[in-house]
Length: 190
Image 1 (cartoon, helix red, strand yellow):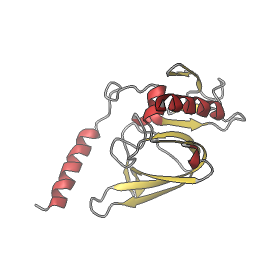
Image 2 (image 1 turned 60 degrees about the horizontal axis):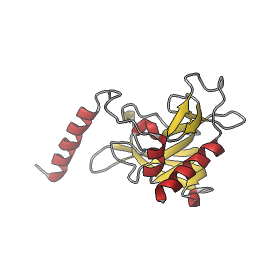
Image 3 (image 1 turned 135 degrees about the horizontal axis):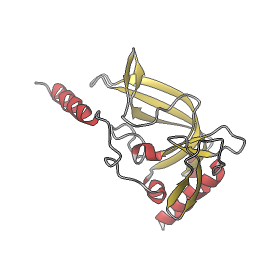
C-alpha cells in the first residue's frame, strides 16, 4: 500500500471517530483569559471571501477565509485583509464540516481567537466554538457568542453572557471587547 493510501485511510478513520457528535464534556471549557493568552492572532472584521479548495493528495475540502480586519491583536493586522485556511467547506455538491463548529458565512462580522495552525481537524480557533464570536448589526456593534447570546461583559477571567437573544439585551461593544482582549493578552506577556 502506498504512503498516500495509508495516510488517507488513517485520516478517514480519525474523521469517522471524530464525526460522532461531541458531548459537552468532550471539549474542555476555556475561560476568557486562556482564549486571549493562547490565541496566535485575535481578529475581528467582516468575512469578505470564502474560497473552497480540494487538497489534491487527500481529496479533503478546505476553505480559505478572508477577513477585512477592523480590530486585531497584534495591532498590525488591523486595516488589512487577513486570510486563514480551515478544514471544511462545500465543493462540487459535497460538504465537509467540523462537528459543532459554527458555520462561517460570507459577510458575517466575527471575532476569532485563532490557533497558530488553522487547517487542522481541531478547528481554526482556540477551544473550537469557544473561540468564535459574532458582531451583531446593532448601532453599538455588540458581541454575541457562537449561539448568538449577547456577551454582556468580562469579570476577571470569565465572560458574562445573557441567556436572552441578541437585540433584547444590550451587550458589550466590539471596542470594549477588544480593550478586554488586549488587557488580558498584555497581562499574559508579562
